[in-house]
Length: 306
Image (cartoon, rainbow, N blue to C red; front, side, top):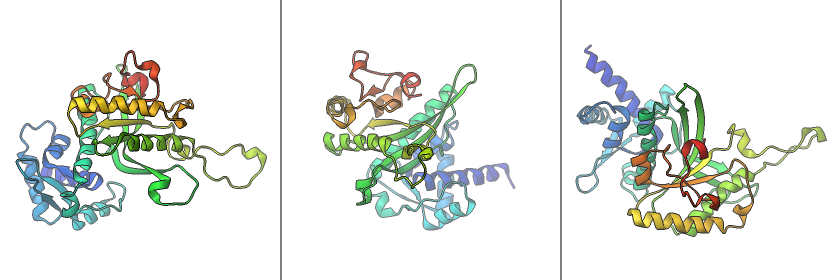
């Protein structure tokens, strides 16, 4: 068997895993993720068309000369589940969803992960195409009610390893929100408040002795340290994004619930253009909770979010 066929088979399997985990990815994004050292995207397109011919993947074609949006068919999803490459996910894509109103948001979440991925390669950090998981839910109240009223659903959970000059590896987790300027600022602020509620949330305790001590926060069941919350503003021109960031900071700092100091809890905000151009370790993050940082405006990734 020719070496190119073996490489293509391995790349096809990797492409299937990425499509399964991230649900909807453009051909351009897949090429940047899976063949970053290849100048031409034709090889990636060849693999995608092979998957389509086998009934494992499909695409929708947006109007104009925009990259095709690729997703797995039910057969492709089952094939990935059988390999146990990635955790099983109940959400499946179809042509209607791939062409629907939420598609741009899903692609923006992929673009956010890509910014981390591409700059990690430049810096020698460790961050791969499967190191972030979309739509991760966190319960923040004991009350019963609709899922949307009792959980905050992060657009993505990122597992990033920053490699220092002396080889020290620091593992960092982030809960990422991507805002495409489609909702009022007060609704966006309410979702960010929900992260603080999750930080504070303690599950119901079982009866026991006083020696059991106080119940641990719910987040400690999942994370060794509470992940930093990162908000990426997208979907508008840079002036509108800058105004939206300013308005959001004012709204957040006036929130009574967020005025209570919470050690190791922070919300950083940047814009997609800054993230893509400068990278996540640049001084692009505005701390929405701490007005004392306004004079310098941006915080260092390593200092403020490690």
